[in-house]
Image 1 (tube, one colour):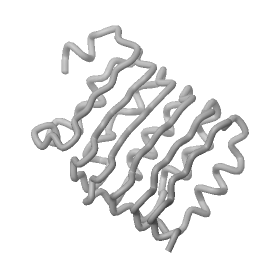
Image 2 (cartoon, rainbow, N blue to C red):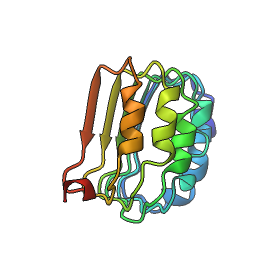
Image 3 (cartoon, rainbow, N blue to C red):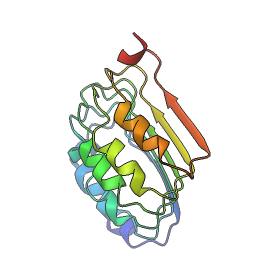
Image 4 (cartoon, rainbow, N blue to C red):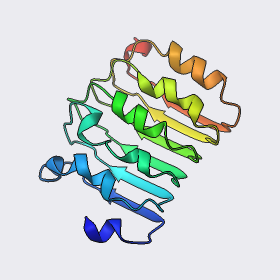
Length: 164
């Protein structure tokens, strides 16, 4: 982690999909990512986190980030992403956000809905809610309605509680 934090990389992609040994390190991992980073692609699929407090701590220090792609797909125990939403809210220069929370226990957008208005430079937003228990996206819809810079929006709701 020390070598990573001292690097001058601007783009990185990591896949920890199903990596049980990484699960204990995940809470500290974002803090080891260099602040100069502009493009981050993290695959945390199949990790079985319960809350975003287990992996999202420290995203806020990535203030130069322009693109964040985060897959939490098939993390069947994940039920709360409030901490993730709060951390992303500090990424004021974010242009692209791709969040895959399909096949999780998420029931509410929570802080994610609230912080979208902070992302005034956001142009591309993709969120996968497929196979979740989300049944109300009215808060998310209100936030999206005020986001004037978004040019491309993809919300995948298939087989969610909304589609039942």
